[in-house]
Image (cartoon, rainbow, N blue to C red; front, side, top):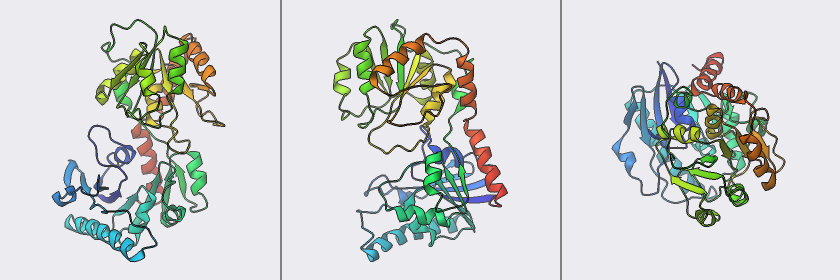
Length: 362
């Protein structure tokens, strides 16, 4: 059984598993040690040791770095990373991991590469990392035997550092969105056409398309499904509108019921992070319902799914396309569902296994 030492950028979650967890947990015939960063400088959970989260996966929390240390303070900087490296090596030795595949997910992991014992190195890049120095990621990609990139833009960005880069877009949990399933109506009292968004309403989420559309079309209903950051600058104005429904978070198993309830689904940009062309799992979930999708595009953004997604470049066009979407001719739903099926996590992981096997790493 192949052993994998996974350095994740996100904690293991039974409620909202992220990209790394989705991939690692599906690799066949593998024993996995999954390390995630501490949640805060005071997080002491690393002292509890690992916990079995799957028959073949043990999840561990890394010791925290108590305060940010600049790389120019080389001795302190190296001491902090040495502590983390020793912890990983001790956990690996305790579980008899010998020459595992090392799976890395963020530029910071370059500081552990020379401290750990492994047979091969993978770097999975799922976003633009704009805060750490560029040479961290460059060195990590250069050292990796295989680099996975979640978008063509990320692949192009890393291409000077590696000649072995494979495109690996995000995926999603397809069975949750079975079109044949019987679903309850989560909003039985609403008769207006409903336009929906699913996902965390962060401070940087651009809600201006929703506000503009809700004011221009008071007979339409707008569903915002997900946790709410009260610091979003437009949230208080949306709260005052009677045709806007903020439901808060719902269990993952219920999200498809809410999405199927909508006539149109909205995809909104975030202004608090750089554009990286990475397709969110949310969009694949939207496509899986077969419902029309209207996406608010970034300036100069190339439409990624022009055959199944309506792309708006300004607020007026957003409202216009939402109206067109409600009157869409039949036949597009099946096409959307077919595009979504291509992004199911088992298919994505099958491609990972093919690439790693071809490279002799599995």
